Length: 509
Ligand code: C2E
Ligand code: MG
Ligand code: MG
Image 1 (cartoon, protein in one colour):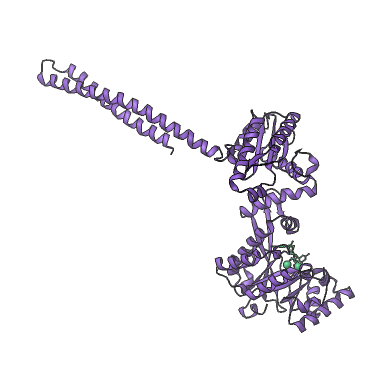
Image 2 (image 1 turned 90 degrees about the vertical axis):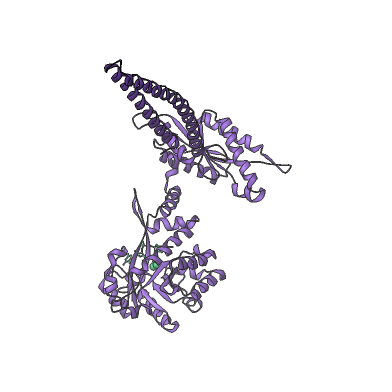
């Protein structure tokens, strides 16, 4: 309950009590008049009643004054609190939540849409500004950007959506006027801020989308304006781009995916499914964790659609950490089995990967030797010394390393001697060619022989039929994975795994 409300309720209770007292007093007077007038007791009673009423009236007058004063104070405090929530403390621009509400109000309803332009504005090179001139200068630059926006867009609403991200709601769809205003903003900012005797010139990138022409809903309009902003940035910054439906083409689509994937990781909308890997007797030795994204609107999005986007942005680190943490939590569902996770080449480019592995193991209380890191052949064969060093380091922590999709890359058998790996997964295309393709047959049996010498386990991937399983077994593969054994599934659907995975097999995986 707000302070204002509690004062109001409290005061009203006091007020009503006094009112009740006065009513009782008045009642007693009426009662006295109706009883015997010449009675002395009646006279005394009348005096008492008059005294009560006098005190009551005095109290009431006091209460009235005090209530009015306290209500006034509380309402001022309420306004202040609202302003603190609504306005960003540094720049005075509206905070994100209030801005989005205001945007939706401005756009009206689908039956009664109103014209508006949403302009997203990002300060260019903000990080470098902070790094080179210090945070106080960065703060001053942000304040300057907002005051310049407010000056040039006087009848509009300005919001701060994030660190250096601002937005303006213009209450018309006159794009020429908006263009002129953004040009003026760029000119003003170019004149710069003074820093230790030097003028530091500022610049912004802007993207605009029009309502209801491009979109009628606040969130959608934001996404479209963001695409336009992205375009401004890739075209060299310091400019305004207006949204164009062309921007929704496939390549640009990745911008949507990136944005939504970030939210999906944050909102825990990803799932880790598991696919069993068995030995030749059908016992499950390990399970491969395969990430799934169940999008609330687009349905299930396969990893092939979003892993490359995550790799191109800096999201792959966050995604990889989510996957490993989930695997650590889920491993208790599969006693006696190892879990394998896929690691992208991008993750291996930074030492933070090893730190992440150590941190998550510590947080979840798991042992590294229960996990296998799968890296693709292309990553391994083209690996720079520092990547190999990280693989060695992961191995010395206790992780096993598997070479995934072997045969799709350079296929260098020579590499197998030097790479720090424990098993090889032969790509599905070779397993499916075993029945009819002599190249596949020669390739698989050569690989199996080399693996035996090197003491590496060989996993046949993508086994789809009983015939493929028999052929892969005959070719010398010792582990099997594929739809014929089980499709990837949620851990709850794989309860049968525990019954068929004796502990003794697990540690040989
Ligand atoms: P992968 O590591 O080679 O995983 C095997 C893929 O083959 C999986 O596809 C799996 O569902 C599919 N598969 C398994 N058995 C069969 C079969 O019998 N027939 C056919 N046609 N396909 C089979 P999925 O889940 O779509 O994953 C595709 C790729 O995405 C993975 O290939 C892996 O490279 C990548 N990926 C998946 N999860 C992750 C992850 O958590 N992190 C990273 N970095 N990459 C991941
Ligand atoms: Mg894999
Ligand atoms: Mg594979």
